Image 1 (tube, helix red, strand yellow):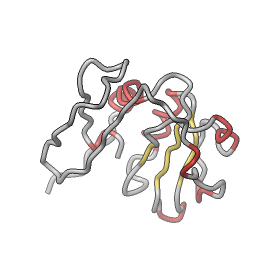
Image 2 (tube, helix red, strand yellow):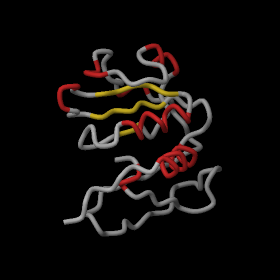
Image 3 (cartoon, rainbow, N blue to C red):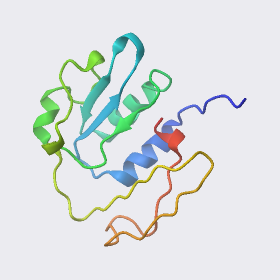
Image 4 (cartoon, rainbow, N blue to C red):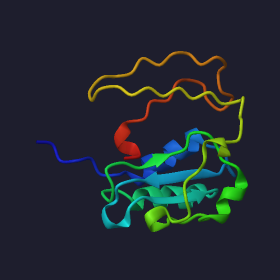
Length: 139
């Protein structure tokens, strides 16, 4: 049996740099983190976001990030830090900021199978080619 992959801080930083722009507000969520319940926080600092995701390695079955940037006022809940038991609540569906310059298509695939990536409606300005991220990068 292969041991679970360990988080790689440099890969986490790279993924954040590809997916987000400076100043984007991103929610981190790690549900089912044992006695801590759901751990979550809101980040507008990419380095603090990377360190928080890295620190969650092994604490929950998965670590999830919003793909769309959120409204800046959500930072008041837990700015650039993680909160245990998510007492501050989680982002409502209408919290995302519309961004027509970025199209991200994500599809789940079985382990060991490379997903076919369809060309987005428009090529995002920040990307020259599709970016493939291993699920272990942010898990």
